Length: 173
Image 1: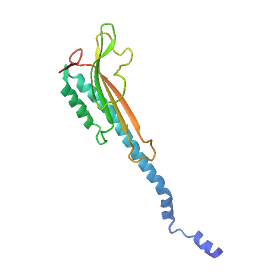
Image 2 (image 1 turned 45 degrees about the horizontal axis):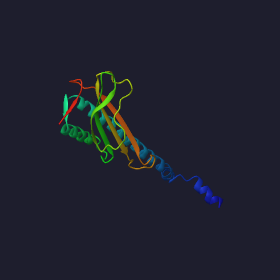
Image 3 (image 1 turned 90 degrees about the vertical axis):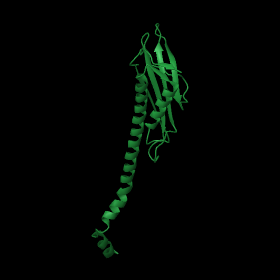
Image 4 (image 1 turned 135 degrees about the vertical axis):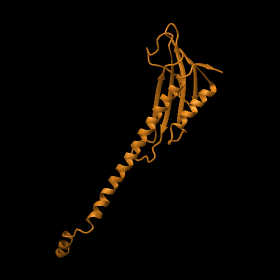
């Protein structure tokens, strides 16, 4: 028995295979976690980019029509690629303050937006007779692997953009 044990103590063949078998699950898990973290970051950046682009494009006009708003919402849907668009919610609105400083909604256009409540701006953001385009974008990200993250991560972004060519972007029919 001792002679057999001594023979295995000095034996080094197969040690690399055993080490690899022990370390492989850790390396695999780290690789999957890094890939998933990158996808989460990319989804979050896409949502922020969509909100900013929608506000910026809308604020570049003096007037917008229903068809133009539909085009803006549709074009921004393409920006979520490579992620699925099924859980993307979008809303673009124009808010203005009257001469007394009271803020009201001039118009709103939405696509698959289900959240309750109207668009808003932070207190003191609009002074009397000012206007702003407000966009709200919500995206429910579902992880590809789901090993390390919750089932769904909700990203919600707002963007504000002042009209560039007029005091207010008017909606025309």
